[in-house]
Amino acid sequence: MKPLVQFVLLCVLCGTGNGVPERVTYVPEILRSRVAGKITQTTVALQQPHCVFDSTEQQCMACDVWLVVANSTGVSKFENDKNRFLDPSMFTYRDAFSGSNGFYFTLKTKRSNYPCPPATGQILTLRVGSEVPCTTSNCNAPLPAGGTFRMKYVLVNPDLASPTANIIGETNFTEDIKLLSAKDPNSIDNFSVRRTGGMVVITTILSILLFLLLAMFAAILALVCCKKSVQSDFPAPLATSGSLRKYHTHSLHNKSNIIPPKGKM
Image: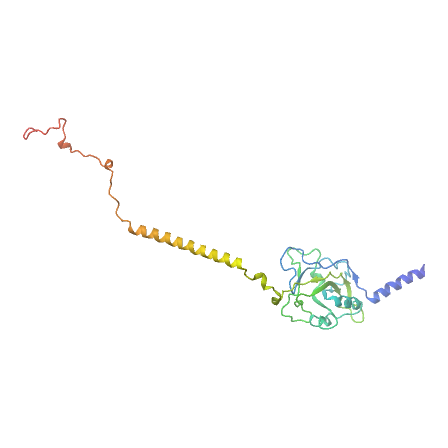
């Protein structure tokens, strides 16, 4: 029994010496909200890794969470190198795709900045490729337009030095994330936007109808204006006799309708 215990302890010590990172069953997620621009030509919007590394090396409060961005060759290169000491400042955006690395570290954040659960009102988006201009060695520079990348979060203990492996935790890589690409203007088929004979005829007919409609409107407007100008400003005389009243002078009216002689009034 004792040799078995020694063997188990030896395996544990060997595993610790090899510095194999603890793998958490999490895959970085593209932003869930229905917003435009989650994936553009040069950027990707990820969910922040809240609650991802809570159970990994809890005593390491100074640990940093990094995002690893890799192309197709960088994925295998990172998997081969992660069990040794990796200095993030040596794996930058500038050298990631021009050399043989194929991956780089970016978006360094203290693990304490990813509390679990996240604070109310806290921004939960991590925009990859949004830093312009690129001013630091591990800047979050725009990704090459139209490229295909895979991403993962890693937990790095900055207090560990070479040759000890300093990556103590990691997530799984995402599936391939294909960025959008702009279409080459020279590849656009002009035939699809070329005017046909039928379109020209329809356009001509509509133009003529519009001209006639405007002409009719102008004629009606001129007729109304001329009619108003010839009308008199004085009211027309009353032509109905029934509207006039008869007026009788009381001094000239008597019962017999006879005017008495002078002096017998």
